[in-house]
Length: 218
Image (cartoon, rainbow, N blue to C red; front, side):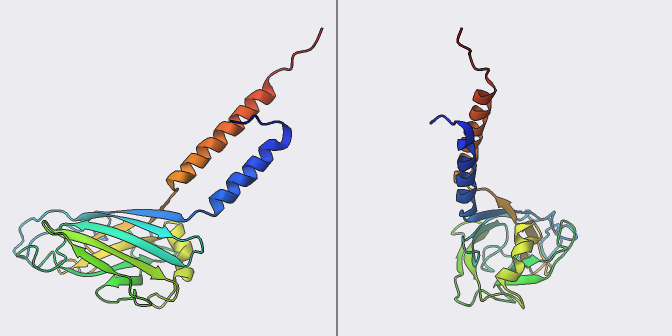
């Protein structure tokens, strides 16, 4: 690693900041029954307990911030209506909800639908729907493009999405208001972690060297 002298720390900081600003934004969501309002307790149509539904989602907001790509996998929700004999777990809709007041325990309106109604992934339609070959659940991929939205746009919702005021929600026959949801949380990319670490080590090293007393010649 090259040694840093004097004001060489500042160009490193500027370079590091510039690289970070150019990176795509990664967001993740952990979907659970407990995050619904009120919390969902899945049962069959006869009242018997059924397996809790859950899932994970990853979103990539591109550099231009005009497209949000997602991959979502959900377990124990029937994606086809035939993965289980009961109807309570049948998937009827899936959306992203957002508002300035959205928070754990607080509902928000639909801003973009990608399954069922409303359906907004239509300019163009990027949805890929893949039920599990065995088991209950499936994976959905899609992309929220700039012209799309449920009486809104991606641009209008960026602040809510990037500040933790948006959640993804899956709705079933039993829970038409939502059976499993998770808030979108921004996460640094692995490359960004590497840059942060490298920059920290360089800056720390420079600070240590600058604090060393200089030897005087006798």
